[in-house]
Image (cartoon, rainbow, N blue to C red; front, side, top):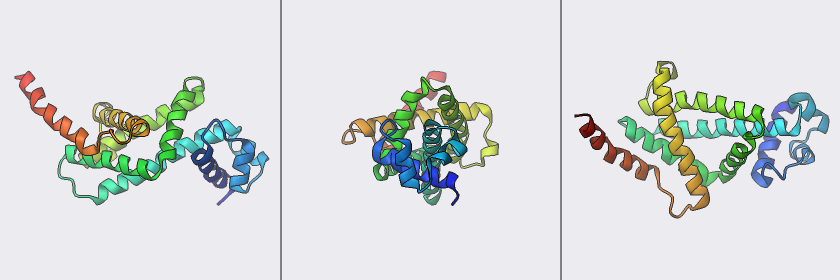
Length: 194
């Protein structure tokens, strides 16, 4: 790996161990085996590096969840959504630090336009990607409306689920619980249209 990748790996390790606010540039350098000048050269600042590490962690987590979902046998969109949400729960159980770092990032994004833009871009890609997983189609088959509606619904469920698990894991719902709620709502939605 080059210094850029080493820095990202070290920053992710520091986020997991110390969190965003407590991580110093020297911590990242020690964890990555690089030097302080590398941070400025590759990322411009420690905060920009930590922001990049958070976004990179999101991508790692998404890849893990997508792989778990594709390896299962899910026959319909709600079953695949259930599998996706169960994948989130499993990933969160294994790596709580990524979820904690993401919550810290959301709070920082209010005052850091660059981070807000990066997270917004990640959500834009995520909506399309999640909708494709749930519908079991290629991403280029997902139109804007489907990405906005289905992808946003799934990501909203993920965000709420993550917060509930972080705050109260014993009473948080599972993917199965949330899918059951959606199945229960489906007949009600059909009846209202008639």
